[in-house]
Image (cartoon, rainbow, N blue to C red; front, side, top):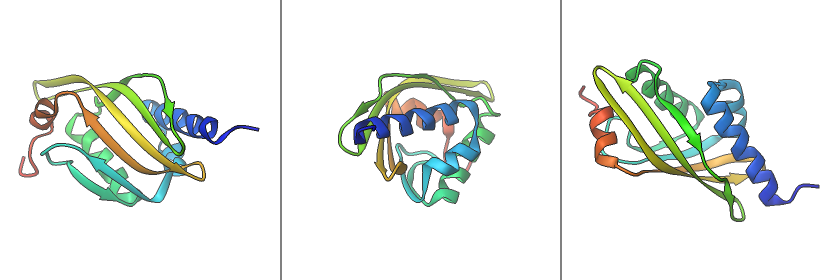
Length: 137
């Protein structure tokens, strides 16, 4: 039988795999209906997004702005700690003559094999903000 940390690692692994392959069905299975997502920075996507539909809408907006190029390029070691998994990542996107590529850390809080909260950290938040732009753009 898997330990709680092993279950959390497996859920996180499936989540990142779904994000990398665009598997929305698996994402909707793994994200809790009332998931709380904390998007960093001061850009059109920043802030706290609550609920599966709000989060999926935000991700869809990122894909639209980046012309489908936003992606997680690398997923580092999944590091569990009693219901939370921290994961170093590398991500990138291109759009309208702009590009970004940087490191980040995603922190997932899990309950009952679902992700109930997500906190994201970017290594160069000012560059990410410039890439995504403001809500008025």
